[in-house]
Image (tube, rainbow over all chains, first blue to last red; front, side, top):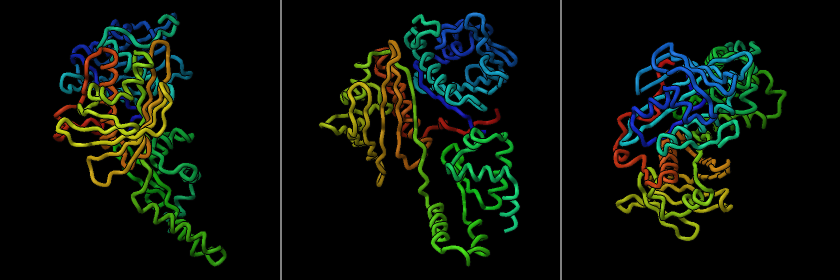
Length: 144
Length: 262
C-alpha cells in the first residue's frame, strides 16, 4: 500500500530525544504546532494519546506497533471528522551521521490537502524545538 | 478480444477508464480519491483492465502510475467500424500507441514545504547568496555566482550543477534552472522557491519541476537534506550538511526502501 503523504526531515539531535519528542505527552504538548494539550504516552502497543484544544478532543492516536527508538505505527483519528475516520501514521527514525532522519508516512488519509500541510508544520515545529528549544508556529489560540 | 469487451461490460471499470481519459498516469491513491469506489475495488478493477490490455502500469520509483491504452479498443473498432470511419482517427490512436511505448511519461513535480523561524530577508539572502550555500548544501558543495548564473562544485573542485536565474521577485519568489553537470546528457529542469510569511516565520515551498525521472530516484533525497540543513543553519547559526562523504558511496539503507506491512 502506498502512503498518501510522506514527509521526511533531518534533525540534529539524539535518537533518544527524537523518540521522546514523538511519544511523551509532555514533549508533544511543548512542540506541537497547533498548541494542543496532550494526555497519554505512546510507548507500547495499545497505548492511547489524545490531543485537546480547550474542551475539544482534536486527535486520538493509538499505538499499533512500537519498536522503541526506531518505528512507531499509530491509528490516527482526528476529532473533526464526522463520522470519525481512522488512518494510519508511521514514524520511522534512523541515525544519519550526527543527525536523525525522521520519516512520517500517512496511509489511508481522506482529508488530503489539510493533512499534508499539517505534517510539514508538525515536522518543522518538532525540528525547531529539538534544535533550538523554541517552537516555530503560533498557537491556534492566537498566542505566539 | 473477449477480455476487452468483458472488461468494458462493468460500469465501474468504464468509470476508471473515464478517470484516466480525464487525467492519464494516475496512481491508485489518486484514482481512489477521485471516485466513489473503495481502494480494494479500484485495485480489483484495474487488474481486470490491465489483463485486458486497456490499462498499462508503469512503476516510477515507489509509485505505480496507470496509463490508458486505447489500442485494444481501437483494434476492435477497426475490425467492425473502420470501413465507416475516417482513417486519420485510427492513425491518431496508433500514434498514441507509439507515444505510450516510449519512455516519455512526464515525471511528477517534487514539492517540499518547510517552516523556518527567521526573517524574510535572512531566508532570501540564504537562497541567493551563493557564497553561503556551503553552510547548508547537503553535499557540502560550494557555489559561486556570476551574474545570473550560479556554479556548484564539490570540495575537490568538480563542477556538479549550474543554476541560472529565470525569474527573480525579491524576497518572494525565485525561479532557476537546474542543469546537472554530474552526468552526460542530463536534461535541464527548473526549481521554484516561494516564500510566504506567517507571523515571525517563513513558509518556504520548493518545487522541482520538469523532471525526466521520478524524484524518488535521488532528487527528493537531496532536497530534503539540503532544506533541513538550510533550516538548521538559519535557526541555529551553525552550518549543517545533512549529507556528506558517505553519500559518495552507495547508501547501505536507502531512504525510500519499500514499506512493509502497515
